[in-house]
Amino acid sequence: MKSTFLRLLIALLPLWAQAQHTYSTEMHPKTWRFNSGFDVGAWWGGTGVAPLDPKTNTLVQSHLMHQTAYSGDIYLEWLHKKNKPGRIGPDIGIKTKLVWDYFTANNGGDGNGQESLTLNYINVPVLFEYCISFKNKVTSPSYTAGSSNSYTYVYDHGYYYHVITTTTTTPGHYNPGGIPYTNAIFVYAGPQICYLAKGFHSLNGTEAVDTDPALTKSYAGFIGGFCFYLANLNIDISYQRGLTSICTGKNVYVSGCLFRVGFNLTRRKF
Image (tube, rainbow, N blue to C red; front, side, top):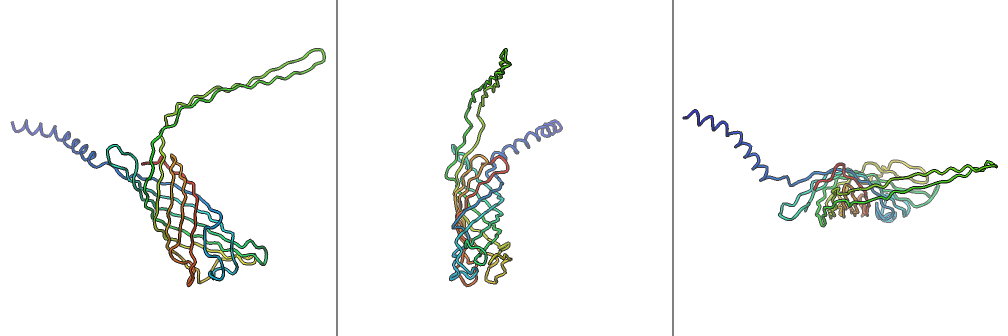
């Protein structure tokens, strides 16, 4: 009797273990989704070092007016999935980046009157995201109509005509659609640490690495903006502001807007 009971217990043990695993999986669903990708962007005018007047900024010798900014980054993102009945998509997220920012300004002069200041920064922001819009969609069916083009050539041989007609036909194409994709809008904000990789100062046509001791090697800043997710495409509009001066003893900051376009490396997970 005992041996029969033991054999029955041993036979049921794998089923019990499988049931426990299934129960554990149901009780602890995956609520954080990981994404990664890259962005590139730019802005013309008003983004970079400010002010650019030598009266208040000892890093320059003339009034610089023309500004250009470029940016590129790779990002890592974790999105939190809603866990409520009848609600889908993310609610909050955390994103960090490794960013290269390029800021340049010049006075528009030539020869002996030329001056420019160029600063390259490597930034590491920590951004907190909040989803304000999320939509699951599918592509619509469509039909492209066929077409045909005919060309007629007439050759006059004097005593008779040689007529040749050629027709090129393009068949119609039906796209059934039904491919799922997702649109979302996030608002985000967070601090960032910015390190000066290299600076250049050009004066009277001669450019050299900027070794001015007043130029600080790093600064702390704040960044905020909106990010639009269209399937795997990112469209980002942001504003950043330095919280500490980049010029010792003066109130000189890095600030301004940037427009970025990016791409998620895999199908975006929400």
